[in-house]
Image (cartoon, rainbow, N blue to C red; front, side):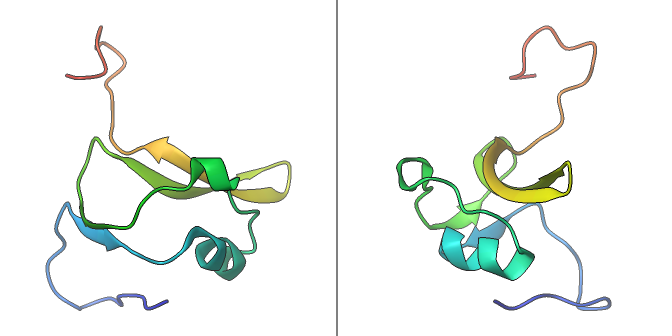
Length: 80
């Protein structure tokens, strides 16, 4: 798994998600999602899509599939 360092250029709102979830989970010391929740590789991930994120709760890390984006507190619909 490669990472991008400081000073590597401008950041875009899109990225590639092609590393298998079990590798990502191992890298971050997290439990992997169950096979039925595995996301397909995506070479054009954009805000509003479902993505993997590492969450830590009570000292345990897990790799979860979450909605990527910010919904303002005043929004009546998450599709704002």
